[in-house]
Structures are given as structure tokens and as C-alpha cells.
Image (cartoon, rainbow, N blue to C red; front, top):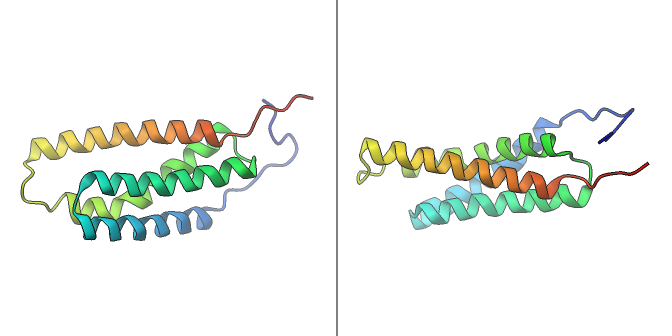
Length: 126
């Protein structure tokens, strides 16, 4: 795919950080309200779905760029609630925490791959 042949877009990391902070605030609110991991994950995925929809509507993102942005925003979105709610819970031992972290990382990569595939711009035929 040729993409932007002559125009090289610079990443606006400030904008993606804003998306991440807004997602972190929403996810942290859900985490403090419910204390349930599946609601934390659902709120983070909801933010990622909104971002994916916006990227798909703008049609300016190839797969690699969309994947990089999705991973960055998801990291910002989930990190505060994961550190402040999931890790300090007393009912998890070290093995459960490692297993949940690996499962969460795998699920996050899968969600980022799917969102990036949806957000990519359509192929252009010249």
C-alpha cells in the first residue's frame, strides 16, 4: 500500500496522551465504583472502541500506526486503575497476579490488533 506517498504525518503524542488520560479517568472511576476487573476491562475497551471509530472515520491511519496508537492509549487508560485497584487487592497471591497480568496483556494485544485492523484506512487503487 502506498499510503501517504509524499506527505509524512507526524504523530501528535499530546493528543494521544489526552485520549489516554480521559480513558484513565473513566476507567479509574469505574474501578473505584465497582472494584470488578471485568468492568475495568470493559471501560478500557470502550475507550479504545471510541478511538477506533474515530480513526476509522478519519481514514488516515495505516495498520502499524493505528496499532501503535491503540497500544499507547490502552496503556495510559488501564495503568492507573490496574496499579491502584487490581494490584493492591488482598485476595490475590503472586501466582494469580502473574497469571492475570499475562492474560490481560494477551487480551490487550488481541484487542489492539482487532481495533487496528478496523481503524486502518481502505486500500487505495491508483
